[in-house]
Image 1: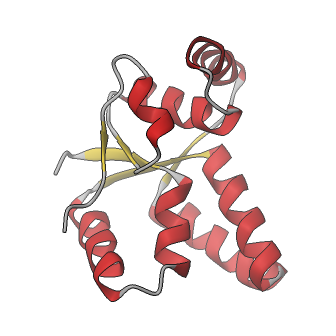
Image 2: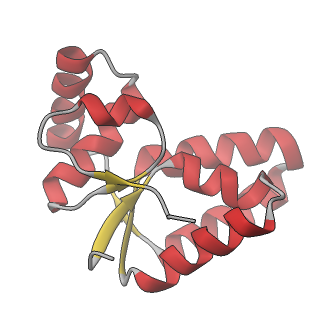
Image 3: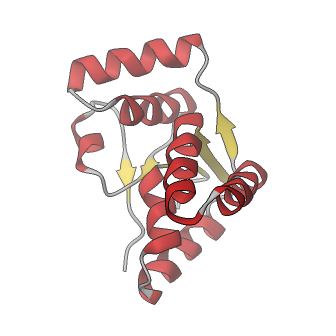
Length: 131
């Protein structure tokens, strides 16, 4: 495991909603083994929105607080936004994926994801917890 990684929204959705004990174990093991856990501010937004829609405001706010506690949040400042825009334009990725990729490239670490959008971005490494 690398010392740090940026976690994609997919990790949180799988963690909260997969219902598969093996997937949950693999994700938990990966999180515990990675001391430098980062998330993009866009991942916080996406995760909060999904949890809010499925479970309501209190659960969404609680999970956002946990993300802020357990992860370094990479802000979407002007430079990060410009980097994300260039990535999205160059590779045809959605805005969120561009922002997450930009955070990983800025911090020199992989994105933990199984989303194929990320695999096309030159210089970006990805990984998904193995079974």
